[in-house]
Length: 80
Image (cartoon, rainbow, N blue to C red; front, side, top):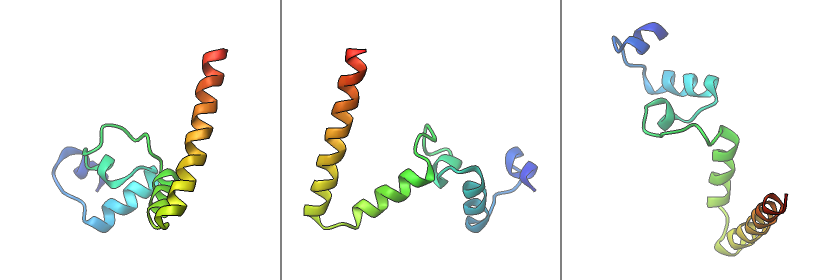
């Protein structure tokens, strides 16, 4: 059946597409060709979705920590 999907002879159902995306550890938009890269793995996407559920103040704390961590890593890369 996968061969038919690859050749464009059949289109998977949403449920089948979800299972394929899960097995390949990519998002549905990547699988459908809507995303140019699979740079975001499933865990990253799930964490972003979890952050979106936080209250605004909590989100700001998460972003402040993330910004500080990323700035530190960028600085370390520059100093190497």
